[in-house]
Length: 257
Image 1 (cartoon, rainbow, N blue to C red):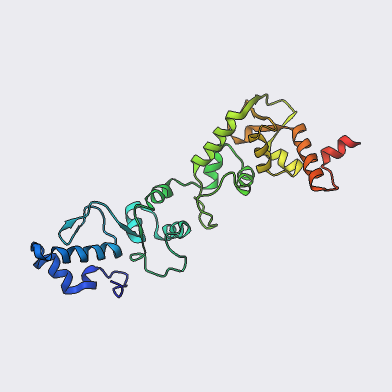
Image 2 (cartoon, rainbow, N blue to C red):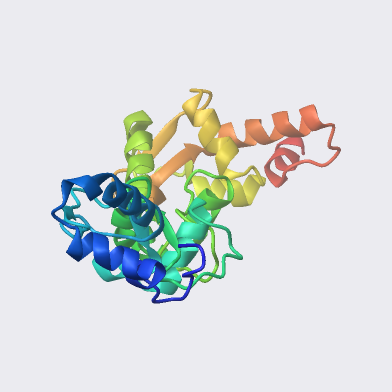
């Protein structure tokens, strides 16, 4: 099995007459059952056989191994993309040079990943789903509030919509309705730009009930979440004092004069 490492080398080529004899000539002889079982176990440890396939007279009830080739064929996911996801998931090393037909992995362990990949979306779809702009999504990602399923720049469809919807739903439970014309409130993104407090710190303060969260009544997505300007200013002042920074935010300087 070790030496039969060609892209299309199968058990028949690896074991030659032994495989042929045990799969045909002595298939029904009970005395050879231990040898068939030994060879079958060896084959299933090396080659991917699907559930329902017959190997040495025994129909396989479950798939033990997948190769990139067999997984791509079953899921419709391209082999190159699939390889990137599996490397990121730790199925094999990045420098694994085996051909796709021989690059195998545990089928049961990585079954959830194979099911998930086709449902992943790009940033535009994610933004639409949660009602956010590109800069808002980038800020959430930068602070780890939303994390792509895979962090590979060449893979665009790397977002789970369910993660974004869960974050929005969580924030909605803490939000109070705010009239769109109320100037005392500002969006979380605007608060970040004005105070230089990152989004993660602002949302952490909301979770800790240190500052209230509002939701503009004319929208339901992430872009409608807002915080009180005065709370943001106080947070900025507190951060500056605790860090010993001599500079003030524009709002703090305005109040001082």
